[in-house]
Length: 319
Image 1 (cartoon, rainbow, N blue to C red):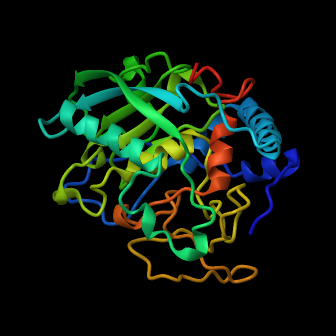
Image 2 (image 1 turned 90 degrees about the vertical axis):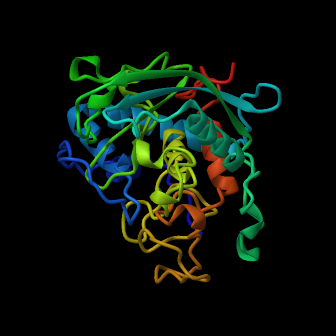
């Protein structure tokens, strides 16, 4: 099990990698076979563009660590943190103009996955049963905004969030979670902005083919878990392998992973990292198929709850 990293120096090292961000080429015709999340790459590009972001994120990390040590449970509404959701639909084709019914299926999936109501929650192996979490966060569809476009693919440079580039600006991003449904391209299913980023680009982007219960044609990513994964990032969760070989996700109760896992790994899947732990491949923050991910851990729950505390980066939510 990993220890939570507390020092600002370590946090700065975590965020030091800086890659260029480019827009993807034309969207793929065939379905994507392996999960691709661009959240870390987008973060690295944002860190390169805004030197102050690393400082803000270090402050958030220090705040989060303090809140987790104090066992903070989060700001509650009717017993739970409640998140209003605005869905921004950018479409070129009829298929991309996803229906309100499909959008609601995504809200339903989020509510199940974040409240341990998913039917596969009981599939968590006995080894991890003691740390599997009911996060206790609910989502309510607030508004759907639609816009026709001639754009074939949007890439990962936040163009879909900018009116000047043909997109839709976020609605009340300090008090509402904005989701964008569009053709991303480049083999990317979705990406999220971590806490600390600019409010003008805050939210989660999901390719329209993987938004909600989109049908068997888009398997193995047809169960709405792309949004669960990306909303996890939006709530300050890292990839479970820490985006490095045997890296840290800053959570103490998740095993150290060699790297990302794909498909449906056989259990138990052992890491070759220190201690050779069994990897928590069924965690929502790995890269496995939708039907192979079905749990958050208690440590991840505490990390998510901390951002909603008074003074936290998303404290305006849940009032």
